Length: 581
Image 1 (tube, rainbow, N blue to C red):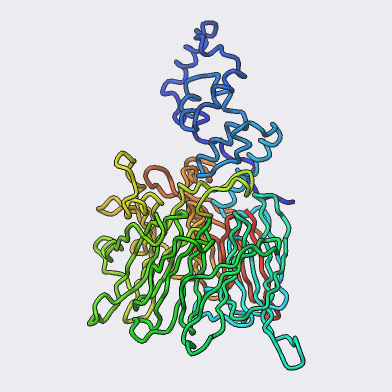
Image 2: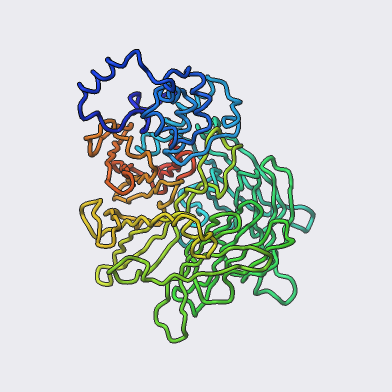
């Protein structure tokens, strides 16, 4: 398989001294004079130093490598390179590596794959690509969760690295009887990180109607299918949701009777399954809401025995985003008229912790003033979701994202009343910030990671305001292409005939994507387009920003943990391309 990984990948920081000696000739003469008088510590055999290095974390190893010669040699071992590479890019390694169960060749292979993966994401120089089609789908096939989407007899979507297609039809089951039949086609997207380079397709057949949502939980290898039952008796204005849980091999796993009811005209905009919890975000018509729609946010344990919570119900509020930060920690954004005489809705950001059944420990409402200093309140606040799972799983490949270092974001939209145009910017923060909002952090815990602000008000990126915040001038107004992958912000800028893809890398090792320290940006060719990577000086380490030239024909870009799924509308058909990192 062809590789676009740059062969001259720089040596990880910490392997060599970061500054040259101020007097190189004097240092050399001292070294020659003391050649036969090395300290005892420097005469330790390399194999012993390698054993010692296994008890050091990456920071201690980097510091020791600068002053202790045997550790410097030991740190050239691929196993120590893996420790440093994973620390630089906020990754965790499979437990077999930590227990020294990998062979030397396996360690070298994983190290090369990890380097290539990080380089591809930081520079958008994907390692390979695969084009494919979804038979039966057209340019008009509804995409689940998109703007103004409505469920029906045929729709499709993507969930945690799986594409799915829902097809329903009436089948004759008797001389005078018909029943609705539903088929869910699942297509697992390929992944170089996990070694699954091909597509794996599955199908689930059901005798149900009103399929509203599909969600794949890859860690437990489950797929949830949300169904609304038919109206029973006189209560035709509401529906009872039922969650059918299957294993990915097609075996039926559980029938979950969700203990709530939805409006008959409800459309489910989002369904999340994390560990044992499921969350449903639904919209239904409301004349009292600011935009004509009200939302219902409902959470329940999949086994149906505990942890039932109506987070948002019976209020004229419209939810603009929800995500599990951890299996018991969540964050949501919505708009709500707080008083009957309000002419405009207030943006609310809430976080909650589910500590025991039927109880949310705390909900913190953050005022609009958080949007940015010296700036008017935004018209809309939307949660930027992180596509990585909310907890680690060493079954998903030799390395995976560290859930404790993931970033989450809020997107602020400002509409110009004269031109009608929308400009957007955002701020990014870690899970520890959300924990501090709900008062979960211990007294002796270190302060949360500071917020990273990105906005449109300056032409020059990297400028710092009076509050010590760094700003980037980028456009995040495209609602179909703003996501987070670990500590990388992905967004798309729409143009007349295609989209430009962008990645801002907040990993500590992002500064090494440019081969020379004096380079400010680098342009690379990538098939039919080019990528440009630049570094911005942001404390405590540089941030890398990569953008592509416009990709013609692209109408949707969906990042996953292992690549970017592009949907293209050609004159004759619809095709998809998976860019594998």
